[in-house]
Image (cartoon, rainbow over all chains, first blue to last red; front, side):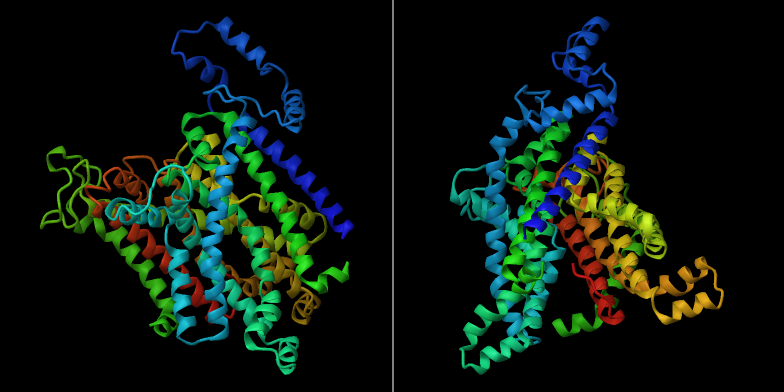
Length: 310
Length: 272
């Protein structure tokens, strides 16, 4: 177990170094001169000398390797620079938006679980019966629907026509419903299928037969015994699809004017606010790596066979 | 219903792509309107005999724009998937067959890229190079080749130890021929399934990024960008957001049915 954590931490450091270097180099390749971007905001004529002064104050006249090393040590101390537009520190900006993104992501996950778990269990237990067929159809539609369009349709009916739910901004539980449903439905299809195939496999295992032979009720057999193994691919998949979840939250945040990281980065891209974009990429990249480590450990806790192996 | 879909999945999927191709090729001859022609006198008209689906907020024919959008979607998706295949499949073959240092090098790149979510990479590239549909395609290729490299590498590694490959080698078959005649065909079913499913994902990604304003830019009649336009008038003219949404949905559904059906028929693996 400790060895695993050690090797994964090492891998994380390698990925982290790659991540920082890649974002740094890519930002250097970005078209446009950051000095001019900064000075152009006031829309006044700038002299060559003024440009040079800003260039020097930002350290942009140094060689690339020096710039990277300096930048890297600042990043390690969580100093991600400041926004070209608002001049707020990027780390503060990210910290202030992280909560909203977490909320909407968790909301989406909840809706996803509420749909996928019952549907997955039902379609595994009643394999190839009408429930299963219906859930397959639902999954197929779910993965094929563009989530931004689904969100628009939901806004049109629930917020505009029927005036049941708010569609803009973050202001409590009611505001969370539409974004969560949009995000959850988009993911539920994949997870339903995954849970179904995992459960079908584990329902055929000898230990499930043994549990039945001991006279345990069918519900207990499914929930306690079969589900424990059937849920493993779902947990692994969750780690892998966390990225698409964060990606999905970008769309949902834009759609519902939700003040999270996704909206922040899209606004930053449109305004060419490079430090903010860089901070976002770094932050989400590290988040994904960290959560994957957590998922790996969870799978090992759930699966006794893996726990004793290494 | 579901049984019917299962049985004919491949054909329905192919049918959708055929329809898309026909729209691309014949559309401009059948619809006498320019998808980009602005006519402010005819703004937001409802459907009639001249404009079968009405006009948008610039008086442009919606049907003409949808058909032009089909061409854009078809073109960009095919370019992206071909590029991903052309990078991923040879790298997978090489990595699996040669092994050693080559394999280690390719796999390290794969590991590093896999850590990053597709959408985040796409957003970073759009962020760095600026919003443009070409940049979105570059980002997609950068992400999507990985899947093919992995699938092909895996198949090659299990197959190359088998007796028939050994026999080919003993018979003096050159390595290149072994790769293309014996190993590549083994990997093909899974590559095909993955490609079909990926096409659906690519279409969703292009349209989502265009909807966010990071992909296709106005006045390009890309479906996601059209939805972005329609969003502004969704209270007064909700019908404008129905057409592009349904178009995206149907095409992605076609891709997923094709991938699903191929998987069942070719007995390959692969999930959405």
